[in-house]
Length: 256
Image 1: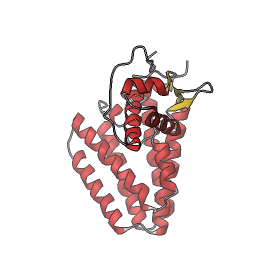
Image 2: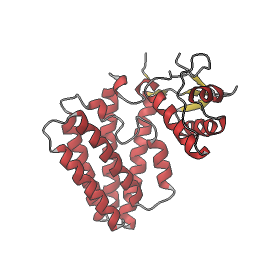
Image 3: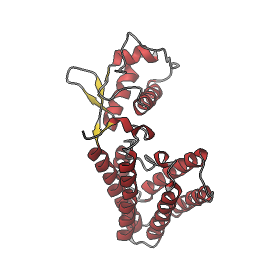
Image 4: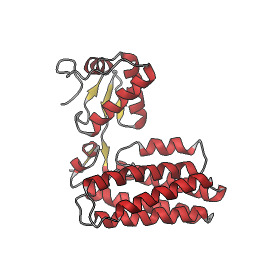
């Protein structure tokens, strides 16, 4: 088991910094290790083991582990410490559907309340950049990576359009699950002949929801975002045949 033990720890010393910044660095490092499969599902993680491996004090480590538990990647052990969580395929599907529901509500509120024109312009400019990426008849790995960044940016802007300080944290929480993020399965489909076609469909839905918001059509905007999440549901089912192609895919349990 690839747990964080003190006996076989590899030195990954991080430079000393303020507690808050250091906690974020520890959080990101551990998160990358979990998603890359460097820590097995169910592997136990303790503050002391992380402290010895990363060369930092236990205070930022404690904060980082708590944040990862709040994200849902870790679960606390009654006897102390944490374990890397596992998820059923249904858990992953539920997370994707929940993201679609919250994004749908965000789009509905943006349409009903009226979105900030500057933010709408930023969203439109982001989609123009995605259009430029999708102009290529065949996307390279670099093209897919660029799409992932732009797609994530568009979804962030969309979350801001409704102007709710209560909704965005909830959306960020559910989207922090690797398989529920807006681009969670994009790279997993990179080698599929239908990959570019699916991205074009997704991009059309992006355009449609922005148009619905501009036209103040709340119900239409919500329906589009719920439908948008169904693309990810389809990708989830296909990606389960190759879990290593999905960040965090090894955390999803397959039925026996």
